[in-house]
Length: 118
Image 1 (tube, helix red, strand yellow):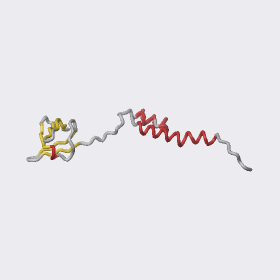
Image 2: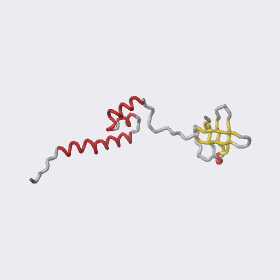
Image 3: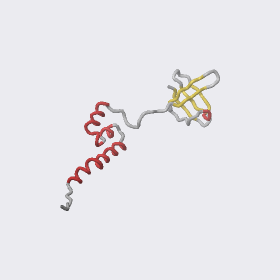
Image 4: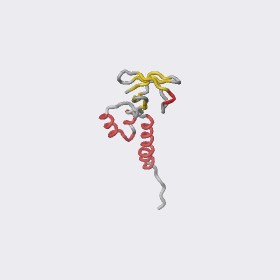
């Protein structure tokens, strides 16, 4: 993969896999270049084509899949697997949903006594 090495207002320097360095006009790119972006660089006879490689990595961290599945199976209702994966927002959502829809109704609806009119 090629990598953007240096970005100026007028030129962008790209290092290719084979060690070749390309300098292209920054305004000719169809994306906003940043240093250390990974790109694909193709060179034809008279033109240079550069495409940015989008990172599809999730925001979570790399986790052990076996541990993740065990946590999801055993403590999935409270979101333990989401906390483990580094997805704190979803973990909090699971936890709050568990309290609201499972724990709260079980304790507060069964302990109330209602006056029945017979």
